[in-house]
Amino acid sequence: MAAAPQFDKFKKYFSRKKPSIQEIVREPTAGGIVFRHGEKGVEILLIQDAKDRWTIPKGHIEEGETAQQTARREIGEEAGLSQVDILGWLGKIHFRYRRIDKLVLMTTQIYLVRAKGDTNDIQKEEWMNGIKWFNFQDALDAIEYEDIGKLMLLAMKRIRLEKL
Image 1: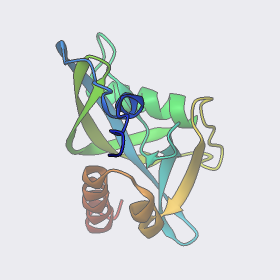
Image 2: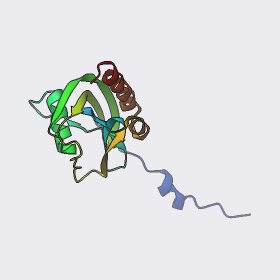
Image 3: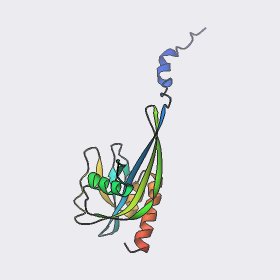
Image 4: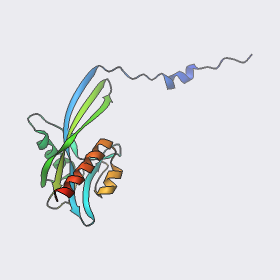
């Protein structure tokens, strides 16, 4: 009779338990769909995060700050764009992810933002893998988050209808 397989050496691959969730954390954030009029039409600014996902500039709302102030600050910090017009609120997005033993519920307020001045002078922060102006369709294809993509479509509709 054949010897029983030794499963013990395989257990380590299958028994990795995540720690149970001990706390739910709410994180309010804000950001913007930043656009400009380029040579080939409307262009959207995207940043590439440390995990190579293309997204919009956004970040945590600091104490005493409004969501709109946060969006302006984060666009300045993450893209180096200080001359922007916030043209209105587009909507909010809910993200949920796990951070060790915490469940993080993130709500992001998204604004429509027009870049002004020297819009070619964009600078990424050290933690980013990239920053780039995309034509609208390419931005829509590159964006990692479906909900942000939907708000980009809404932004484009406003840009066209209101001739922004």
